[in-house]
Image 1 (cartoon, rainbow, N blue to C red):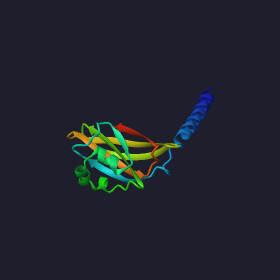
Image 2 (cartoon, one colour):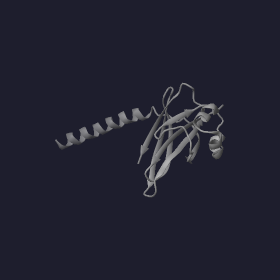
Image 3 (cartoon, one colour):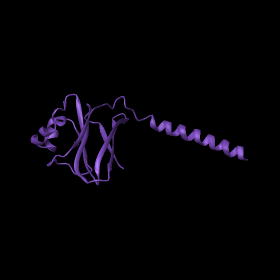
Image 4 (tube, helix red, strand yellow):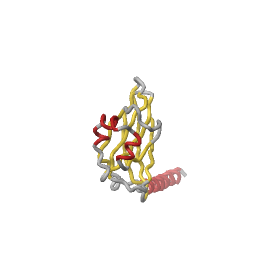
Length: 151
C-alpha cells in the first residue's frame, strides 16, 4: 500500500512539473529586450496617477506626461530614441525606501509583461516616484501588462 502511495505521488509530481513547464514556455525574453533600466525618478508634476503604467512610443507622448523641464532633469528620459525604442514608465509609492527589480517578457504574439518587484527597508516612506525601462521598439498595437508585486 505504501509503495502505491509513493508511486502515485511521484507520478503526480511529474505531471505537475510537466504542466508548470508548459505554462512557463510561453514567456519569452528573446523578443523582449530591455535596453536600459531607469533609476527611480521623483518628477514633481507628472500627469500619472499612482499605480498607473504607460507605454510611451514618441517624444510627443512623453511631453504629454511631463514638461520638457522635468524631462531635462533626467538624462535617461531625455536620451530615449523613439525611432528604435519604447519607454515603459510607471508611478507608485511605497511605505519604506523602495528598491526595484525589473523583468520583461513576451507572453503571446503581441502581448508583453513588464514585471516590477518593489521591496524596501524599514525606513522612511518613498512617496510618488516614477520607474521604468527602455525596450526595443514595440509595435503600436502591442499590449503591455504592468505586473507590480509589492513585497
